[in-house]
Length: 219
Image 1 (tube, rainbow, N blue to C red):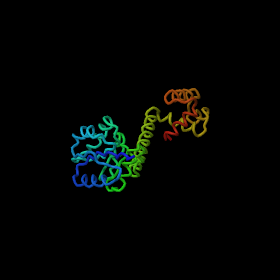
Image 2 (image 1 turned 90 degrees about the vertical axis):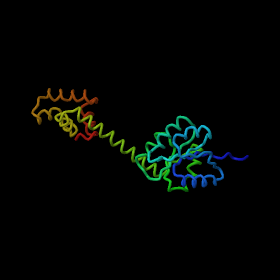
Image 3 (image 1 turned 90 degrees about the horizontal axis):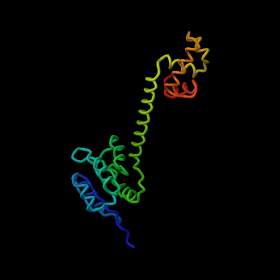
């Protein structure tokens, strides 16, 4: 039985690149370019008319990242798998492309890898391009760092400097009696400080609260 070709919609505003890529893909035995356009406004209507399995979507069209907006619209309106194409390794767009619904992100200079990426996308088995995977990992690390900085800042705003110092002493193994003696405070005052800290940041004990503060780089 003849295997059905993978239908491809090609959205690209560079006519020479589009013509060359279309010819290249139509030369693959299991692929057929079923539609082409350089007009962002025509993409949704064309996708509805030709029902592609895979959309190759240029991110930058007319010097704007129109592809990102179109990826979101196509994801909502069709079942097509979307592969973003870019002429540059632009870190800023990688995460946005996947958020919009793309299954892969390829740099155009890696021309030879496009057919394999199309087959993987059509089979719903996309292996993310190595460049895109690196950028996604960097983005996750950046977001994790921002999250940690936010949590640290939140803790700093919740606690007074004297409370942070008290927690540091608890973390270093000082008892509340020793803290009272070294800080020239009554034991009752130290206990009140500990109670206030536990209400602010939670924790079942002063040691647990001290470890929380340490984990958030307060000392």
